[in-house]
Length: 336
Image 1 (tube, helix red, strand yellow):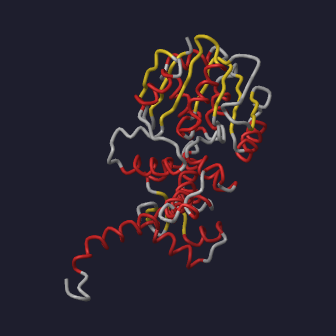
Image 2: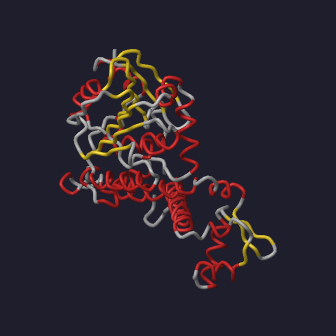
């Protein structure tokens, strides 16, 4: 290639341009959701009315509408803009809250991916050492918002589709979450099943603070308690019927001790639930590869459903079964 000849780099530069456009479109949608701009476009609205409703400059509002139309979020007819059918569906049942959480989490992940190319002393920070805002953004991106109808339908669909889980929760189980984070699953489950009593355990005090506040807001504080403690050290005088282990966020070094404690906390015949968010069933899948890269930077192993099933059986649990679900896999096992 002659000096100054960029033809050989053309394909790579084209890919970089496509990635840039993807990132900028995501940022535009994030801003539109975060500020309520897109909510104003559920019904057709003129630029002047939209500018007044959002307190934005008229010219800026017009340019935003043009850009959102270009990326397929808005459509225009007779001088009025509204969400396209595809994106209008996003604003039903609180799905937009989940989308917003995913995009906020992605912004944190992008920064962490960038630091992975730095020397170890300046490289990625373990989740447990991130600041409060970053922890919350990442935790929210992999959790459901218990205030959204979308969360209720998603969690109910998951549990009702798996008979042992449905029967346990329907009969008023004592439920323990090890690594509960923001406790979206615990809070939503308690909202669905009025006989359920639960305990959430996590090392992050900031996430537990939010979970407690949400329980009060939902009127669930009498049935749910939260504890800041190592999952391997948590104790309770009464056994639990179901223990959920958020294994995707537990480093390799402590997994055996956490599983041993989960075994001790369950009653004989009790159910262990282990979601597998990074199944790696397709080694070249981009999402799986990126999720694995992030988790392994925190010394968390990326395991398939079969590997998690083998791990829990090695800890003494029996009858481990794998249930593929639309968004992730769930492994179940029993304490004999």
